[in-house]
Image (cartoon, rainbow, N blue to C red; front, side, top):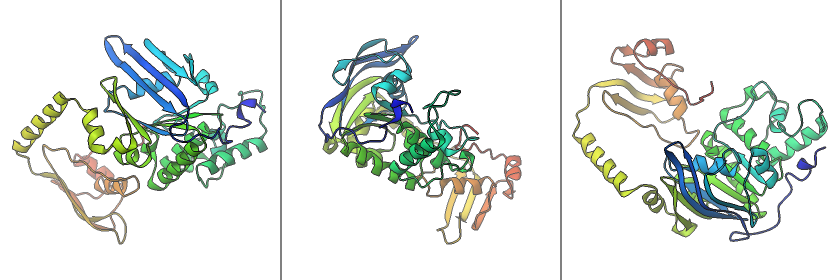
Length: 359
């Protein structure tokens, strides 16, 4: 068996919040042609803490994570790992150093089993060094660390999107790591899977590991983070302790004054604009028996947002709206009449793009 997986899930050296510094960046920069994705990023991550990284789309978060994970080299600035200068030339180098990264994209092979996906990359493709029995043990250990009650021999295609994303996180845990980076990894999780992951992250921090969490969900930041670093237009503008990281303050730091004024101006234009008739109407729709009925009218000339935590019925509500499923109660109609089927909705001008971008 490869020595790289022997102690992959064993607790790290004990250290609480405010423990030894494991990662520090100073003035990191990265450009793509004339586009400057990262202009000046300086922050540190300590063992025993959950550190949040927040910023608007385009603020440089993904570029920073790719640099830390060895996918991209920086154009300038310095990176220190465990007190020594470092430069990761590949993802494998970052993994060997002790950095495990889970990206937002659910990177799995649906035709293989849970076990095959969890141990993917631990062995060469031809000369196998890990026995099937050891693979089963490693898989069970990684799944248990996340509180996942999954059968390792189940084909991944049978799992939900949240379960498939949980498998990618379990895979990351099978290598010795001191810093776990979650790049929007919670966006595909349902409420139960997210809560189990949060419990696991707190345990990891208590064991003396470090977690770098990237999320747009401010409630997650307030619930989990010991500290938060804010990126704005490719620059790190502040690192705040948990007591200072209110949603209002983080949002204010994420947005520039000019952006706030532009948004205010757009809202004034929006308020003065008249809207057209309803093009899609849901009346008294309940997605399952006993659920509270909901009404929704989407009018010409407007964008309507449907919000809620994962697993609270948004997908089922949309599937009723486009005729993919029938509501337990209520009616769905366009200006051309009732929506009776998915094909009928399409003929009536309703187009549906589902959340799973791969399929």
